[in-house]
Length: 472
Image 1 (spheres, rainbow, N blue to C red):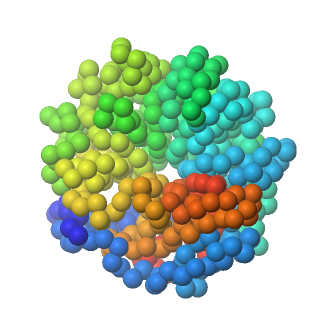
Image 2 (cartoon, rainbow, N blue to C red):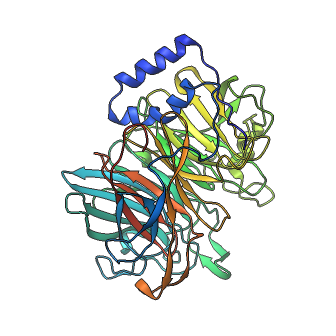
């Protein structure tokens, strides 16, 4: 098992980073804490999951169903909620494919979550007509209210539908959710879920979902039409940074959207693609710690989803024509007070992944670390920063077991939870679901509850227990 290579910083830069961390408010401290600590350990060894974390995992029964759905450390408990097939407000059945999720509002003990459903079929919308984009599509979002004091779900309602493959997204500073489509198509015939369907509208957009009420189901065209993954709002300027998970063509871009109005994305703005000067291809051959100066290439037509050959890389074609840089399958993205971190699932010389940091104030890009062995971490997906200084990583690998990993503030990995779902008719499902991915991790503001999704059969969990500072 080989190590991650961390970038080297000067003593002056480390001192500044620590001061920023100590002075930061809660949200900023979360955003800087784990990766900031990794930077401070520059050059230190990072192996696989060898840290004891919270201890050995054991089978734990769900407080809702009584079933042993998860393996957790001693002292931790959980309850499941929001299962696929359960009736939502209004009578519709909750969809499956539970993916990205964010906490958008906290009113005392009542927490509001918005959850993506990554459905790629031609079935009809599950939301009211006013919150439906394309009646022939079944992806979208569900809004859930959870009572953190009583530890129970209060209600669940549809908030957006008629979209396709709602994968990840991000929370805005004003308390809404950006739900991102990871499917590009024109109106007309298309193959979905193994069958032929006819779509009424174009797809490949970002949609905003408020904490209360329904989404307007209006695509944010200015953020581009592409295979969207994650989005994060840079707090100093209101710019939105976006990742692209493009498998076709073998390359993806990193984008920023500069809105005309900070909190009204539908008013439009400018879309740009990152260009690392002198480095057109960042997928391999990069040096950890090297600082790359950055320019931004204008995307003149953000609504051009396809290139001249009919491939769903219309934005890339425009960006590359202006010298924009290529990345490999970009996934998570999160902003701190002066830095934006983003990940590449299979970038790097060993195709094991990369973690990048972009510094907007000085237009500089740095490769923070790059694993040289897949044993370090196998296909990380959604991530969330913990109020205790650590990081939770959702696993989405091809292996038979899927885990939630913890990354300590000191940069050491440990296994925190394991999907142990095997059902025999319970909740209307039968089968072995232990290979299904984790997604949508997020914490309650006080850090007491960790929320997460099991993709299929599709349910959310709220985990609580003896959390410790420095872990997660």
